[in-house]
Amino acid sequence: MYLLDELKLVPGDIILTRSNEKNSSLICSITNSNFSHAILCVGKSSYIHSDTYGVHSGNIQRLLIDEPQFAKVMRVDDPVAIEKAITYARLQVGTTYSKISAANAFAKIFTKMDAKRQFCSRLVATAFEVGGVRLVANSHACLPQEIADSMFVHEVKDCVYRAEPKEIEFANSYDPIKKQAEITNNILKSSRKFLGNNVQSLSDITSALIANPRYDNEITEIYESSGYLTMWKHEQKQNPWRYSIDLFKALSLSESEKYTLAMKELEIANSLLDLYKNNLEQYFYIKEQYNLKYAEQQFFLYKKLVENALTHKLTAENILGK
Image (cartoon, rainbow, N blue to C red; front, top):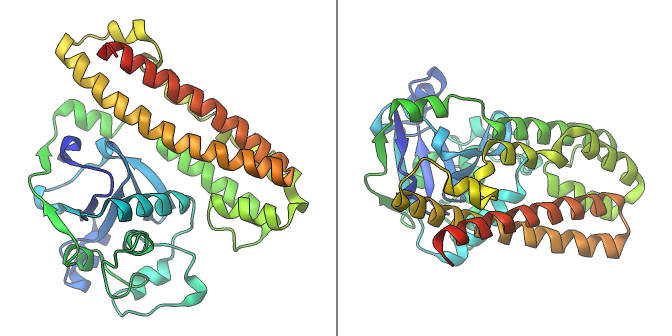
């Protein structure tokens, strides 16, 4: 089994993959393609993609690859487009999967009624089109191979390496991100009962409540009982050293290894801090402007996440001597 080298990836990279699974091989055969799936890297160790469970995030360290030629990394050299593409992809989290559109992509059939739903290559291509880079002729009906062949990308070489046994064990271990995707999908399913089927992502819930606050209490209760508001506790339980200088110093690593890890963690913390601060400001404005309990609930969630990210950042900076 193989993995992608995180050190060679940057946010905005497009990861194209296939596997030995029957569905993947069938897609490649029918479409005469080398790849059956497209993924957008949004951080040093995280990505967003659309599969049969909908749009959700994942950990690159868990993305096992059957053969080295089954993965290819493509890069767009446009920082502004990358930033907008990542923002777009994050807003799509929770959006349902469109089996019909995915099947019709080869024939270039596009149904406007299905435009708000996603499949893998549509998500990636549309994200960059929103950012100002049109990777393919038809972003709504395209294949992963078309992205690989786009004149607006270039390949990042030697990104795949043979995984160590411990890395394979981690990749196959319990994944909290899958639990997060399950919770998100349940929130959307429950919310649609009140807000209608046009709600395809979490951001749609916000827009729907601003337009019609009638179900503010019901949506607030859905979040409260879902487990969404306390998902951050699992991360702190799994990696307490990120939030404690003493625990970080006690890691069984050499000083140089601790320094390298701290550099990586500082980058992650800064990225999370930017994301959470933006959401905090957004929900503060909505809370003050529209007096929604839902917005107040989200505001306090992101307030806590900002505090966690600051602690994470300060721990890494202390190790680095900053």
